[in-house]
Length: 323
Image (cartoon, rainbow, N blue to C red; front, side, top):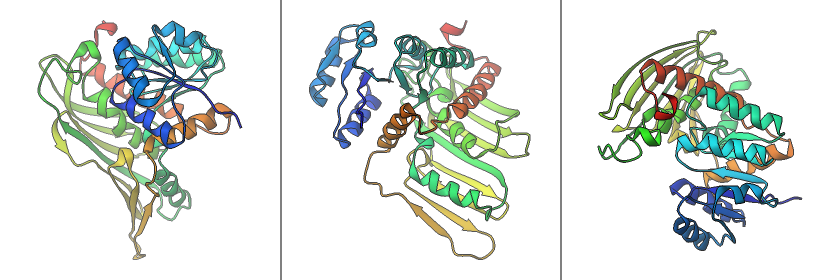
């Protein structure tokens, strides 16, 4: 069985988590690139990565690299995705995958033309607990899905120079945490939202710091989404059906869910083993996709980006690259 070589662009917190997830599988990154050579060297030493690229083009020119993992700020993603596609490298890109729908359309087109897989590193699409929950949904016992309620909020230092509030780094709640909540909602909705209503608070830098969104699609399924970079919210999500509901704790990395039935049947607790990092499931699914055996839900990624772009533009929030 072929073992794929992964190369990493970016050495931040999530890249370290991905390196640790590879290590859980007895693997390591083939190579690493960072705009700061010292960061790449420290990362390589920490995770026994043999190849350090002094520039990104060297990474893309390396014929040994099969999959490029992109973990840079959002506004750098499209540049690296397009270069990876041209170099015939498969791409797993951190969320949000691009700044907007136009960028994502160009990324999808480039990857399709070059015959490579493009996917967003969205844990919700790969956690075993969601697949188990889907079995109960597919059985029809819960009836039709009616409503999703999902929250995500953190209390960041109110410093306009950090990445969360910096428009030059594509800061704001929508791209940083809204992508999780909207991906959760889209996973359970039968089609994308056709109606979106929202209210937003903007930070002094002009990015969105807090928002509430209401979604509705053509099948009368609805979702409420609450986001904040300035208030801690319980990371809970509930999917309600005609005959019951499913509750997820810590939903972006959930290892358990509770299914409550309205007909008196005992509730069911779904649990995954919790023995591996959530990112291990992303690695496994990505490699299966490269083999042609698995779906990475790029269609959901496109739908979520459409919702985020339309809503953000409606708020008048645009980044320097978009003006």
